[in-house]
Image (tube, rainbow, N blue to C red; front, side, top):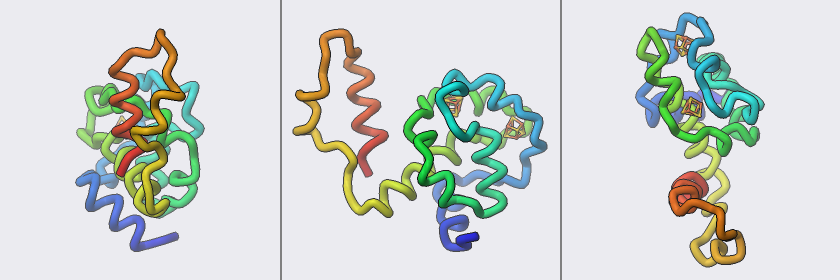
Length: 127
Ligand code: SF4
Ligand code: SF4
């Protein structure tokens, strides 16, 4: 367990993971459930246990849509989406650079891609 990473994620998310009662409602409502190796309730649980590095290496941090459905659904006000975001930020910071630069975008575009997806990708893949 990396205590510094746990503290960093708890501080930047502002989430009290101890409030979670493991009901799984956040994951049941998550539209990215099938795409995510680890689901919102697992993020909360694994952060509590200090298993942050496993989450940082998972593609799940980029599969979350930041839709906040899990936040709306949680009966305990845990806000799992903020935990996912904090882990993603920790991973990007550790990488030391942006995964995607604006100059990379033209080559990735296709005509069916909504503009909002481009904006979201820039936000997710940047520091
Ligand atoms: S914010 Fe992310 S983890 Fe939460 S429901 Fe939406 S996609 Fe799932
Ligand atoms: S909905 Fe809230 S209380 Fe239930 S598992 Fe998810 S984070 Fe924990």
